[in-house]
Length: 422
Image (tube, rainbow, N blue to C red; front, top):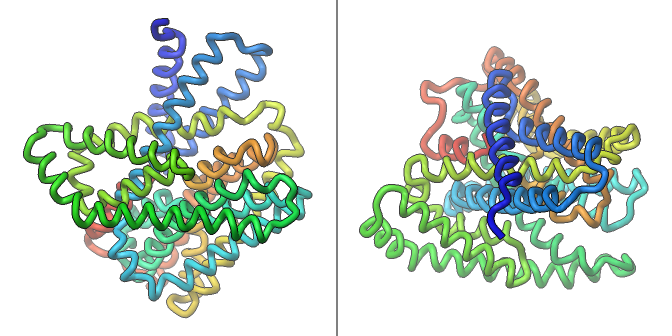
């Protein structure tokens, strides 16, 4: 059977519209994931209203979209790992650790409590707690950078905490995926979490250890060989091939594609410039990532878009906002003033890539309504932060609580912003 022309047509149309929306939303200072999620929701609503019984053509088209969405997932996690600097993160644990741990624990606890208050069971509550524990570093980092204050003391603290938050979110995702299949009876929650989560954590530590050994001893020779023998964007293409293999092997080992892609990026992070190879990686990123968010939103059942879902979504959104603001503001007070600490809390509010990955992988365990509520939360948290944070940063600058630097970002900080989902 040859390629499905309808599927290819839909693929091209969605990508074109997604990029047009991205450009339009940029004029309103809204992040691209908002555009992509809205596009996916429109697709879901139109599909539910027009198509009662999807035929083979629709099924093939959506299968093709899901494949591209999975590739977008791999690219997102690879880029998070690539832009991480494990040596630098280890060096910044001192000041960032109390803020990071507090915001992680408070966000997870508030998320679990929100699920319990809504009447969900342990499984859905664990998913909700994990999903709301992670932030989105790219959206607020871009705002801090555009305001010229990313290199301020508060900006440095924000990036350190947000990067640690991303890494811990990926680790918690791996543990969650190992625990979920064993929670059917929900009789021995602590035992299941300790047993299956412990096995998953040990496996993840082993894989990260192998990645660090690779990064230290094999990576330099491999990258030198690629630079010597390949030209143009070919080194970046070879890196993509390596990432796909590592992601697949990690999934076979019992973790997930997402974990494997992140670990591959972490192992190659000392050679991030070679991996980017000019605009090659950026082009791949811009091509595939829209499909990830579109697929996330298009899996929202139109029947779930109801008034009860809005009520549940409001509770989940409230938990997402309260968890990060409380969990970040209070532990940050020993390091910055109250207004600055509140701004740090708002900066941690948006949920995008990690939260959506957790929602997608655990969708069958939480039901259509709660899944739609998490998409709703991701949309509104990203929009709200994009509108509020610039005003907060401007107010801090006027009061002299943060200072603008002539250069908006150091090389490391600029790399963090460029590695964000913007």
